[in-house]
Amino acid sequence: MKISLLNCLQVLNYYNRKINALFGLEYKRYDSEHEEIFVKETSDRAFEEEVMLSGFGNAAIKAEGSGVNYDQAQETFTARYTHNTIALAFAITEEAIEDNLYDRLASRYTKALARSMANTKQVTAANVLNNGFSTSFLGGDGSPLFSTTHATISGTFRNTLATAADLNETSLEQSLIDIAAFTDERGLKIAAQGMKLIIPSESQFTADRLMSSAGRVGTADNDINAIKNKGMISQGYVVNHYLTDSDAFFIMTDVPNGLKYFERSPIRTSMEGDFETGNVRYKARERYSFGFSDPRGAFGSSGA
Image (cartoon, rainbow, N blue to C red; front, side, top):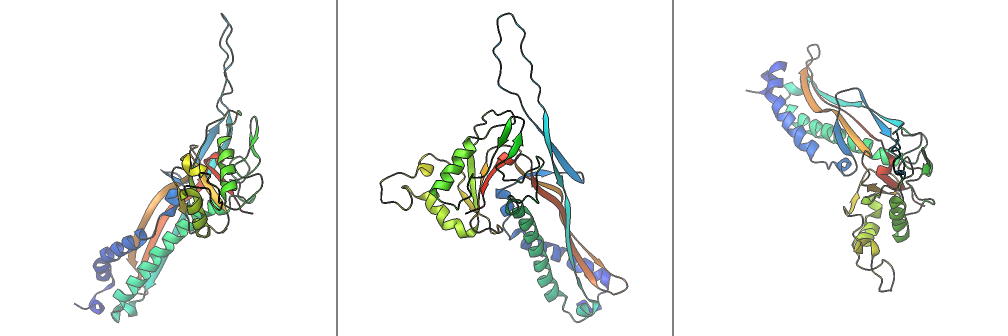
């Protein structure tokens, strides 16, 4: 039976399963680079809010026979994740179906649609880091993701270098020192560690030398590579192809409730025919949000 003899409903039944399978294969072909940065959670609401608590201060000495001191955690700020609906569609005309062009066009359009949906998600995710130094994109504490003046109950903390620098031995070591100096809202040390280095493709060769060389990079001395020798940044480095600053770099830490990805509705596809035009329409749609709660979950430098 020729496709040109099928009516719109028959076309839908004939191709829907085939197109869905092709879309799924193409969508999964693109690396989910956001998974290296964000912790995934699910949502059943229009937005999610996470209230950050201060914790307690140092414990006091209890004198013999006296009562114990009490402390109370405080709400410090609220991080909000507002889910966006991401959707795109294409249509194939009734005339193209009559002319037996459906197979060729549907295959091309479906692959292009999958690529567009996948690319949009990666760009949206990477923009949390790309915009991380901008005062136009503030977190729940009123500061950008990366700041030298994150406000706390006891003062401030920073999760960026005091002087921005490109990725090199000195800047990477200083970043790890600064991460280890992280304190909580009450000023207590939290023993944070840098776990994973996130870099643009332009820095991958520098990162490989810094992370893999047994000796210090660029010297004739017999010094060891302290970062490698101490097993620091234990999860290595990852290239993110959607970072827009060629000399910025980022370190994901082991501090919980840092960068998060909320999935409100997983990607779904649907197909329908239009009675008036006879066109066949195919749509992809998903809802999600990317953001951060505790900025201590990441450390970044915007580059020199």
